[in-house]
Length: 197
Image 1 (cartoon, rainbow, N blue to C red):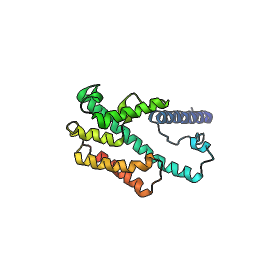
Image 2 (image 1 turned 180 degrees about the vertical axis):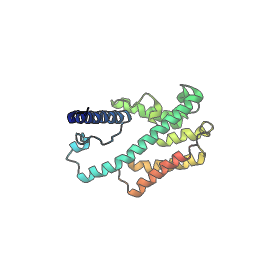
Image 3 (image 1 turned 45 degrees about the vertical axis):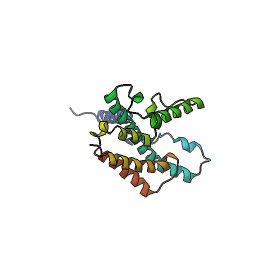
Image 4 (image 1 turned 90 degrees about the vertical axis):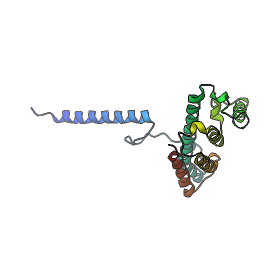
């Protein structure tokens, strides 16, 4: 018995809906856009401010990817340090001897206090979230015996961290950089992961 054409069309339509539903679930789960649905995209907040020159908005969009890369890098380094220190010294590692009070712990506490005193919502209860990129590098090199199995060279950690810190400046302070600096940042981030054992 032959299938009716409307049944085939219905089956085709249902397969399409199942496919779209599955792709949407993947997008939601992984925080990505697969582009399987056109239109309906919500505008970016910056578009609400017509007072900003178009050239500045275009520049900001270009720089946003660099910010995203650095955001991921810096927070992955914080997580690595927290995990390694926790494994070595337990939950109280931040208050122990491995974190220099004058150079790291007190400045981080002062940054948090400034946020609290300003009346803005503190970004975290964990003081490592208030460390600078340079202080993160210092935590690694000060505790090299813990990080030696992870990185191939203490000097390489210092050198690449210094380069990343220099490249971070324009990104963090909302200044544009050219394509060479974009590539230099990407190379430095790749170098960081390459020195990890």
